[in-house]
Image (cartoon, rainbow over all chains, first blue to last red):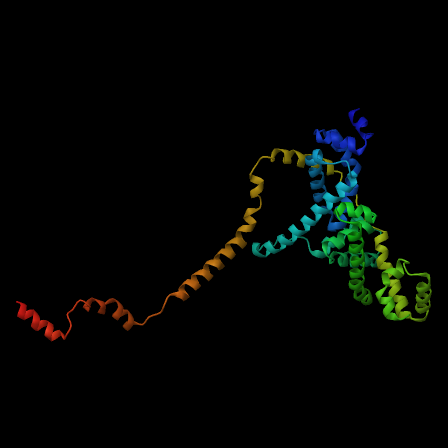
Length: 199
Length: 149
């Protein structure tokens, strides 16, 4: 009964309940936004397991910091912001891990980069080889872009966010986002051209 | 309109962002240049990937794992141990850097010690003890000793 009541609550009301450490309200919020958070992390990290792991960190942070949430922005903007920051941190940590692995002499290496960039087979069983190849090319090229350009392109193209929404997520100006996306497109085009000519 | 224009404006071409006039000229060029036509087609296919983003379903155990994580985070809230988590992974690189530094410092120190030959050392440590002898030859010294007695 309590859960049913909370399902009808709006986001701000849920956040107030979560700030008071209400688990039912938290579950309602997680159910409402887990797909959005997991997919954002997945698009930023390119790996399902990492995406779920970081998505969980996002919700842990929401639970811990709900009291500090200001209702000036939408909760989805807040979630996107945390997801982007934690995903970028995760990528940085992965890079450090790779350096440290050199010293560890361990055979237990991280997954290979191609695996990281490509979605698992079960996620898209109906795709043909060519489509997979194109997807791989775009994702690899995207991955080589500077951090903020990559994030802006992903949020705009995959998540369908407007420039204004991206500006709120990245806490920057609208013109900065326009510039990021313009430079992202120019860089993508430059990097994609030789790869496409090879196909 | 030429091939260079097409190569530099592939995104605008496939996204339909060209002005109507430029679009017309580009279409005309693509009809006459098979290489550019093929390039635009290939690029458009790659660019289409944006329109078919891969969506994944969160695993059914998402909430269960999350609840466990929340419980752990609450338990560890005041613990110092998590701060030390993973420290052992840094041990090897730190040891390698420390060894290298010690080697460099030791080499630098050894390089600064003056190198002297045996004769120099003899004069420094042994000849100094004759400084208290009176002037003149050793013979005179012995003679003067005898006279004093």
